[in-house]
Length: 276
Image (cartoon, rainbow, N blue to C red; front, side, top):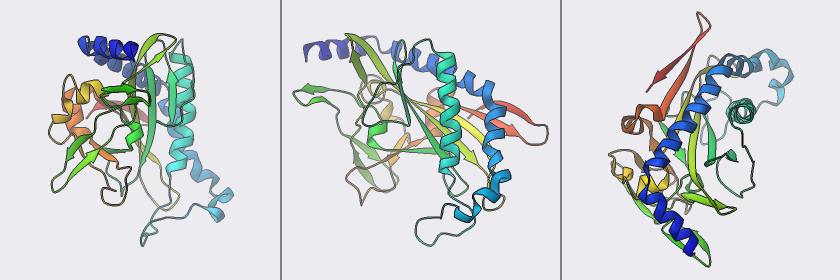
């Protein structure tokens, strides 16, 4: 307990190092995505050429009164992008231990200086491209408590236009492994696709997103107070495990490097990078 509180105190004292780590690792991952962008686009869009081999058993739309204008495409984005992200991790980082954890983002790995969580969010025309909906176990907290039950985060109030929600972050702000401190870094890769017809749903653009560490968000810099940054999730009334919406425009206004797009231009087959 004493070691944990000492580590937390040191990180709070020198919190700008966390920002520097977030920016550094964001740049490394984004560079890898830029280098692999054309292959990612090609592999993602190849699914329509294989239509005869999967269309009979295509995934069915869920939810209340589905329109039938598109097919669920989460697995396409997840499987293609996970594979390329693992390739990027292995090529970009000298240390990449895939340490087991029971919850967190799609990809979790220990680098030389941080414990990184990286999640893929597939986004179609009926989804909001300007937000990420995150579960409690995908957001790091302030880690204010450490006792016989381990690390604990403070609950926070999240305000929306009409409702206020109590949100409980569940990821720690840092890990201690072999007596070394590794800040938690959380990134999201938004995979935005178009719908031409059901099953013909090509990749439109990718957006890499860096959400501030819990010590920056809920303690030192108090970024949670940024207007509109966090709002209540879609299951505020029905779930005890309430999700939160992370709004990307306010996030990019904190620092434009936190939201960067890779846009695929169909006409000239090029890829351009763009700040939000």
